[in-house]
Length: 109
Length: 116
Image (tube, rainbow over the protein chains, first blue to last red):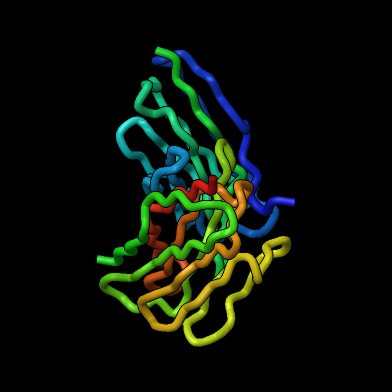
């Protein structure tokens, strides 16, 4: 089973709508990364969260880390077609880096 | 700083041939590099951890004889897909850690392999 489970697996939203993607870890989270990607292209680093309760924002994207719940959420406000892609959470396990199961986002104009 | 260069970005090869993908850390030494594989609409799956000067550690289910990894120097790791078949067509991406845990991971831009 995957150590990092993302939900939903895929998401289709109308432009302008808000959305949330969750990343749940089966192990204790000491920190978490969020990336955006399109298949066949490189990763775009979004945010890194290191402390429980930490919240970071960049433009219309906000990410939070809940260490107690071993969970992180990524929230996009007023989605745009440019937000479309695959969103991946990732965690450092000390000597290896694992990605979540991924969430495919489609934004309909 | 902390740049990883991956080549080639795209490669098309004939079934049965071997393909080598290079991953270089340009401005830092990477004792450990990682190789991932991605299928369309799926996440990146860790294939193996490449350690400089020693054998790579492969994840369960990854054929080590199929995917040969060599990490001969502190700045270069290579992944060779041997006797490639159409089912090996995928997106491969490497990464390296440029510091301690949570210092950050840098990713290559990926290689799109198509086997015809």
